Length: 78
Image (cartoon, rainbow, N blue to C red; front, side, top):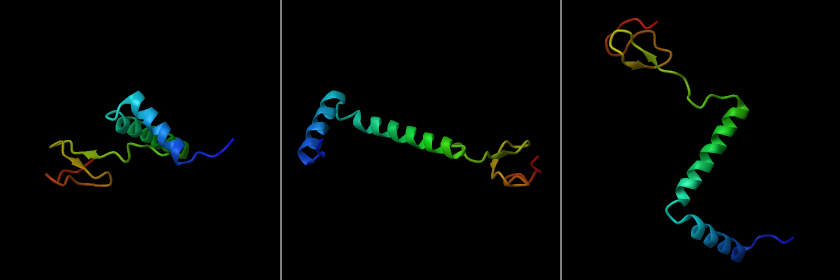
């Protein structure tokens, strides 16, 4: 089996554009990238959502996760 050269890659690209259309190629690439990113996060044990924001019980303002007091009203966060 030989290696793929430039002419072969061009033919493959033309076939992909013909099958899916030029408008769907970025959507497909975004989906593949998202799947790879999710797989990588799961295998490393990381949560893709990140740290949760602390919500103020008085004014419902979202604050940094490590905040002790609300940045808007100054109430103590639980």
